[in-house]
Length: 469
Image 1 (cartoon, rainbow, N blue to C red):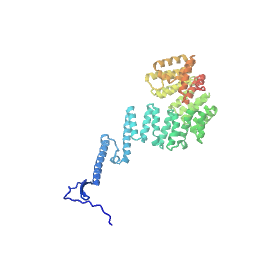
Image 2 (cartoon, one colour):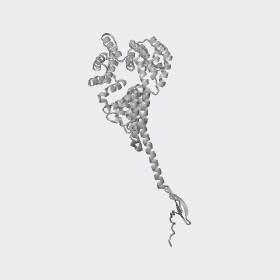
Image 3 (spheres, rainbow, N blue to C red):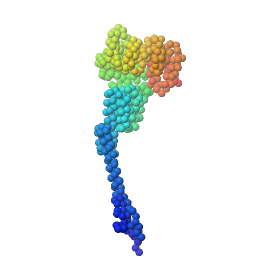
Image 4 (cartoon, rainbow, N blue to C red):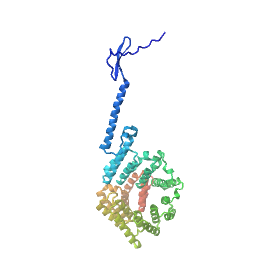
């Protein structure tokens, strides 16, 4: 028995309307029934063609907008048309924004420069040139936290690029962001498969040791040195190793190390300065004086050499008087409008008790409207150093009237003045506040304790470092 088959569809042009491109009427069944049949192939083809025309029109319009309306160079039509190539467009826009940011920076329009540089990074986070530029803008503006954060955010995109590695390490060192530096070297880069501490770069290993020294102390730093075989034998490590030795009580060993190392690396500025500083600390004044004279002869215009020379000739009497005066006048002439350089001079003057110098710098800061750490505090510190507590108290009180916020940055100075003038209860209140503020910043606590001791207030330092703080 044969299997019945479905009746075939019959076209009857005399009984049905004329077919359209998108469909037609057909007769099927028994009795025949008229039914409309869509030509889906033609319909989908037409929709695709219209969509393609609209897409190409939109691509062309967008390309015209970028190329002619915005005048952004290097935006190619094919990069917009092919989705996988659209990142090239983002990069071109990023470069355009970066050029605008640089132009604004040359005009000292800092706000516009920063905003435009951030827009450049938003378009292309992997644009390392834009990232380095933005970080430099933040650094120039004194916004070191933002500068460090900007570079750290670039690690997922540019972890293997030495430019990012060196810029981030150097910025963390110069801005004293030691905790960030440790996180970068021990966590951020290794998370991207980049282990800088295991490489041959001794400078990065030294930066790691320095950060550990500043945050955790000399014992932990000594352990870190041992974890890098051969590091302690490198000439560039001598200054740091000597500092670790000095802070662990081996001052003679530290001086001997620096004494030998500085002769092998006369062009190492940091090493020369460390040698002179250590010699002075150990009372080797003649040795420090001789070394400072050689140092400044080799680098006559270098501020580090000039300040080391002043420290070695700090007596300002006899044979020291004339050369000290000449170098001091030279520093002032070269840096009269540079607050950072003058602050370095003021710091040396305050720790040496040169009240005439700190007062001069204080008066100049008022005339030049210099920003940054208030020079009045340096003046007060120099008065404390020479024992003029009444004068220091008057300066601090005047500063508190004019700007109490600035005085908060030198609470340790207030503690010394209060302690020295018999207001011990008030001094203890300040010390208690400093304890709370430094509970999570032991490096800052150690620095303050060192300042107390160097200014002749060991009991205040003991109060700050007392157990249970």
